Length: 378
Figure (cartoon, one colour):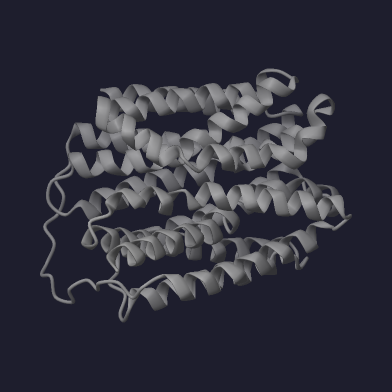
């Protein structure tokens, strides 16, 4: 019975992560090029819309880390999944820039709530069942969602669907995912209502440097994660790769948390974080270093194969360094990461409009990742 509950929880978590993060958060990337073409968006405006989603993610993550949510977490999770599905479909309506900003912000809040609530519920269920190793299935949902949404967008494009239909189709798939999560996920244990006042986390130089490194990671990955498909569409020699390039990112992301966590246990979390950051820097540079297919595909695989691993390693390292209540350290890390995500697309969009490409923003992102690796190792 425990094995059945564990497997259902892991699969439910995987679908939840796929819906809210893989689709709700990242389907914007493959839909962005047809949106730009149809609506005449500048790169700066496209970056601003992306940043609105990341701002919502930051608000949702900080709120979930600090607030005590009344009632069963499962219902909060399902509600957040419903909001994620609705806001994904709502992006298909052209209500102007203000509409896009508001919808993406709300979707970002929902994706953060799903990530935090689903992870807590699933990992607690797996721990009680003695199957913590199935947590890798849960985290694989981000990559599965990215690959599925990329295939969906490519398929709709092949049938001549416009950007609005792509958003509507993504929202419909998200609704199916919501139903699957409702059937699979158990209620799970609830946190104690009166745990007493939490002791503040004590900060030191190591944790401060790790927090800065995590913020630089947020800045470093998000530029390529936002504009990779647009880069491919704008490069004639690799334009044919547009339908598959984001699928490669998803396939790289699916096993990444398990692989990088395994390396972290072998060589230490800080060293694994530094190695992943440098690997991602290579991928970011590869995406713009050459107009050849091999370079762009390498960039996609390395981006997908590192960003979720870096997310897990960074938060693990913060918990190792924090004393007292680790939520304070988690909140600081999330804030730094969110700030990097918000700044990255706007800066990249402005520089791209001014310079006519993404080489300079990508070099800046790679430098940020290299500095993050150096700070983590210190």
